[in-house]
Length: 351
Image 1 (cartoon, rainbow, N blue to C red):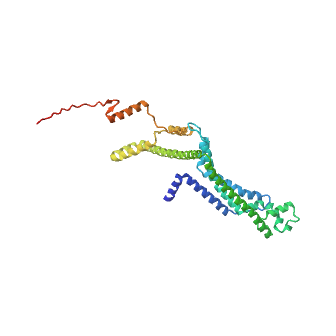
Image 2: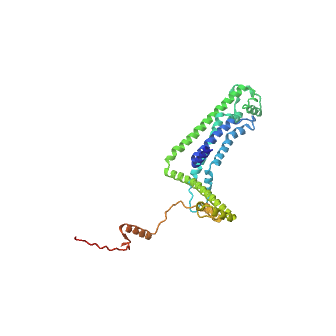
Image 3: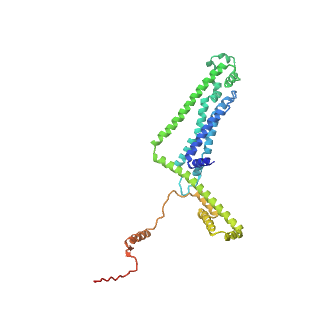
């Protein structure tokens, strides 16, 4: 149990590794789902194409949306996009960087599903079996004398072993369509790999400073939100502890006074110290209205991203510097310290 807790804390502290792990699990899940999926082509000309193409498109869309749902940065992106400007301006480049990062991770599982589906070829066979030219596979007498509707019904039964009588034609047609499907799968993998290569290779060609800026502030937004949530949790915990403590003090004041007289001073000191530490964690916010105002101000008017030290006045700086320098040299503000002088009388004896 401790190992799982440590692993979970590590994944929470390292958001990028956590999201990469989620993407990898989703990719493996998509491949495993396809392998355990029982493919059942309807073998009807009205539904073959819809079933085959739907199997190729709808699950990737579901995996893509699931990638957005499981990504915690989606809520961060939405909050940053919809928040009031206040004293902190919005940077569209940071929002674009966050959206591109989320989209790239969400595309991994759909790409795996499409690749596995095309390599297997069953959905491709179900979708395009009615477009075959049966004369290319040897026995053209099978479709002689058939109407167009009967011919479509005959071709639609090619993916089904139990419904198609001529096994030789069915095997030849199946291999032909699966060959085309696998070729499309390899082209899809090549296209995705080439696109990823271009993104990696072209990025340094543009302004690297702009990329570093957007990356830095996107990480800052994520870390700021986490730290704000942690601070709110700590404040809520301390607030609840102080409220409960005060409640029990008010309800059972006489009993507490009785026990306090019997307890030692050390225990009283420890309790006061704990209570003082809990009150210090409240950061001066000790009322519900004040906390609601703080949360509302954080949403509507976040503080500006400019950290400045408190500047002292020039006069006070001058006085302070003069005092310090004078103290070292024995002078303060150009004059000696007002130190009580002592006179010494020295007598020399010639004896």
